[in-house]
Amino acid sequence: MTITLVVGKPFSTNAMYRSFSRGKGLTTIKSKAYREWEFATICDIKRQSPPRVFGRYELEIVLPSANRIDADNTAKSFLDCLRKCGVVVDDSPKYLRRLTVTHGADTDTKLIIIPETNDGVERQ
Image (cartoon, rainbow, N blue to C red; front, top):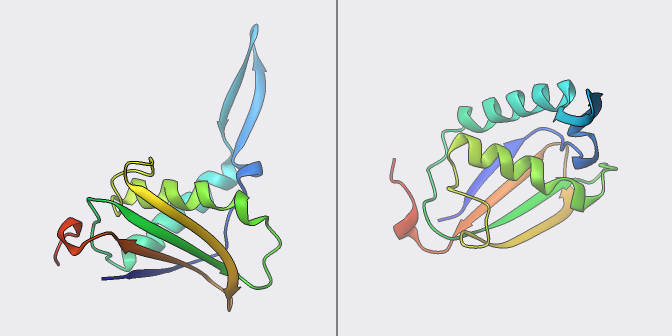
């Protein structure tokens, strides 16, 4: 069973966090733009009611053709959203067995999740 989700444009890892001086140290927080993007993306995913994947899986991220963000800067934000929605258990090597990022979608981004077996997928 392959799960295909359609979400909006990707968010670059380079713009996810903001750092500022606080006392003697440096504090890092999620940027406002990232928090807004993350909320919208999680809503997009939940609206599609995907089944949950409890075991190993592969993820293919298909970016819009006109996208200018480097492919390697898009995976973390999408993986974090999938995890926060509960679609996947984790993105550690124990679960995420292969990650592919390609260009070629029309306007939206496609997240294609391929569970290793159907035994680890919640039935709806």
